[in-house]
Image: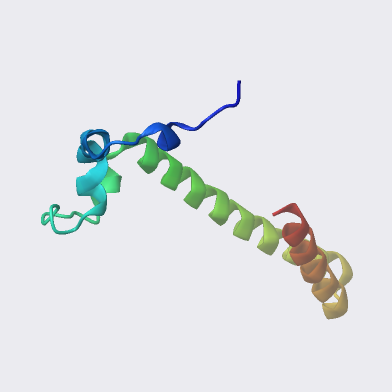
Length: 96
């Protein structure tokens, strides 16, 4: 049997209205006049995700500064510092 996604089996307009009446107000601004752009912050999971993401970004910045300071203190060479910055940027680009 060939797999057919659910959306291909909705044929009648009644079925479409039944299904999309549940999700329609999210996408139809005429029906959803009281749109709250900050509604996502009511979700505990999203708040935790955002705090974790912010902590991760800040930790990455702090680590980059610490590595730069460490390289400069050990070598006292601005060229070595620049090389460590380029290496860090390259490593981040390849990881992401």
